[in-house]
Amino acid sequence: MNQDNNIIPQWAIAHVFYNMYLHRSPQGDSGTELDEYLWRQKIVTETSNGRLVTQNSFFENLKQSNKICLAHITYNLDEILKNEKIFSSGGCLAGSIYCTSLSAVGDKLRMHNLGVYVSEIEAPMMANQGEKRPEILIFEIKTDQDAHHNLIGIDYLRMGEVHYSIYKQLEYLLSYEERAELHKKIMSNMKHSLDYLSLCNESRKSSESLDPDYFLNIFVDNIQFLPILGYLYFETISEYLMLFQDNDEAKKYLEVGELYNPTYKELMYALEPELKQNFKLSGFQPSIKKLTEYLENKKIFTKFDE
Image 1 (cartoon, rainbow, N blue to C red):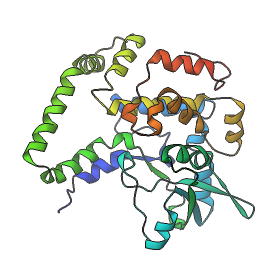
Image 2: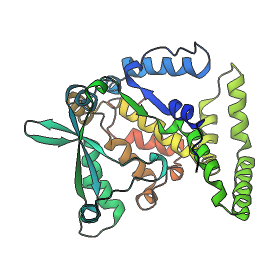
Image 3: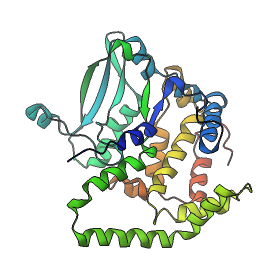
């Protein structure tokens, strides 16, 4: 199969260049470029944990060491070692192998708080493996000295065009009936979500501000028809929690250069328990009322501002 060269610019859009994270976009001050620039300035300088976006333990390890260590949590370690093969994660992770970072502490390695949560709580909860515990596979990766200051990541929420291009290359594998059924379902979902889509279009073209309660309620109601909204919803809430949480646990990990992750994991499973067994962020659909009630009752912030 021939690769479409047009996909290269689409991949470029999905990348985040952390060395230039606070630089103004060369495209000018129009539209989303300006919004993105202003938001980045705000989160880094005006939130409890924002400095960790550009200054964290993982980036420091990348810049200062000639190797990094990553932890992959799995129930299939014996099979991986036997076959000497490891398969990439599915879904929105776009072919990556799900790992968390490890930091050197003397002659030992300390796992990032996200990895601790996944290995001790999430993996046992989701895999339903009885008494069997997940194991940890550690990758030791040598880094290129010339690349130490070239910190680049991927924002999977910007990968829509990439996913669509891949689909177009592979859609010939679907039968005519399957493509027709898919098209019918997409059109039906869009018709059901016209109130939300129209509201977004009007807002984009108008200088008038929307009533936030009205918008958010319509937004949540339409996740069932536009599943990607569930991903946007969850990532927005997660970003808010990680940036603004100021409890003792968050402060402790701030000191070692880590955003504290279990907060959004616990919120997700508390509000949508079915995700423990069938993890799809399109299923993250708690009402705004349910969400704010949860945050008001948890000691995540010293003062929660709804």
